Length: 183
Image (cartoon, rainbow, N blue to C red; front, side, top):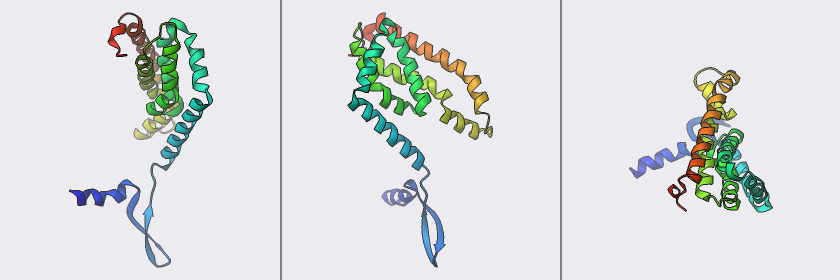
């Protein structure tokens, strides 16, 4: 079993069985199919850290806390916007999760950071269907490259309705059954 894992390791890190001849030598080819994604993730994490250390997250939290009672509703849309911009719910959570949690604490109603950060993530899922990166992958997967605009037009309504539904559920959890969220 361990031997099989070790044999699969070169493929997992990008080494292929393909060899190219260079100067009479057989040289294994290193392919990094996820190199672009790794760079994107590193940049998103870097931006998130700069935002946290520079006080941008805190400033945005103070601004968002002024939305008052409606913040749980808007929290879902912030998550959807984050996924639209980054293409990833994880990246959206990294960018906007700390802001959401801090905004909940700063709000007039002292909302649970678990609720606000969770609403960010749930709203992000609803933004995934309109994320340009995902539209591109989906269109390519069904041989419709170039149809991303049409797919976007067909899905934007669903995304907005479902994001609003997440926001309404968050409002219900925040104000009508607040004990449902652990503190």
